[in-house]
Image (cartoon, rainbow, N blue to C red; front, side, top):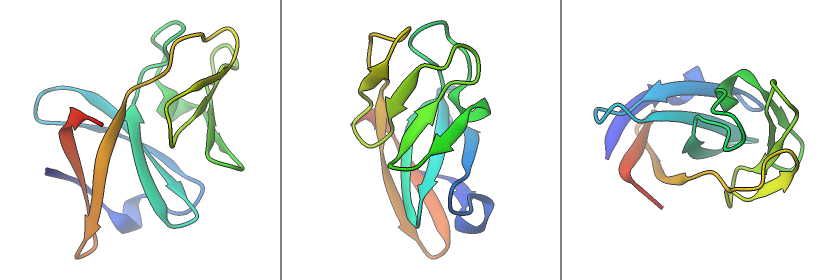
Length: 104
């Protein structure tokens, strides 16, 4: 696990891009205190999901073409995306957000 951000860096309702030591781009999302992490790349056309919007219910909407994803499961919910996005294991401790390199 790698410390990628401070909990204060991702307030409720926010998305935050981070980069793991491997170079993988990850999008952190704060769902009313629950931190989740998904690959920061829309499966439709590789646009950064962190530039999108976190909607109620843990849904990330891509700013480019409006595809929506469940950030807890990674499932693609609406076209034009058909493929899911990868999820990463997250641990929050001592005010830090830690993300595993391995896809969950």
